[in-house]
Image (cartoon, rainbow, N blue to C red; front, side, top):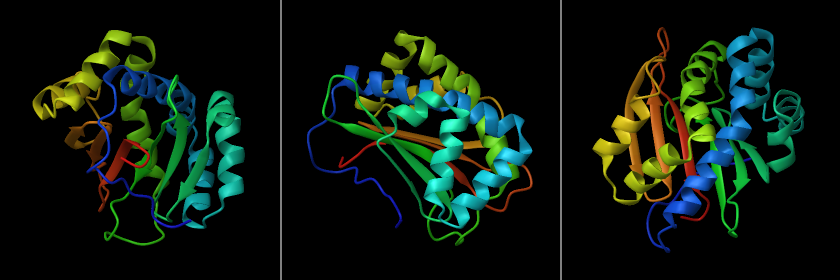
Amino acid sequence: MGEKTSCRCGGATPDIRSVANALRLSAHAMLPFYRKVAANGRFAKRWSRSVVELRLDDMKRQLREASPLAGRLEQGLGTNGIGYFIDYPSPGTQDAYATGITIPPGSVQFYFAPGAHRTVAAALLPFCRALATDREFALALASAMARRDRSAVNRLVRSCVIAGGLRAVDGEPGYLALDFKPPGSKYVYRNLFFREGL
């Protein structure tokens, strides 16, 4: 599958509550997957191989294995050889949101290090737990994103993500990006959340 990108211009601004609900749902679905990646080196190596070799069927099987909820909810899964994106519905809307981890395009081709992925996945666990379990936290983050208040977005994210080499945080309406530079990695690994078509 070709590179998946988000357009952050034009279109209607997404509703804060719907973004918060989408953040919570995707975090709830991804939490067991990230936990498995962080804890199981063999699983992480298989996943990275599937990403690099564009093996979508294998990725779907692994996703279902690690997170049955993610396997049931995902509306699409893609890889560009340097990362992956998983589409989830936005409860109560016709929207879909994508989330995943990728090396920014232009850095390298067909490379996705399992060790770096494990580091980023481990760093994301407390953030995903907070989103999945704390409605007010998710609403505060979605509100800061809607206001383009990058200082507030940064503060909220960093209240949970304290490891993994987090270098930068960016947030706009319907869009969130966390840039990690794991120790020993030559490349940035970007965790993305964005509304499809935004």
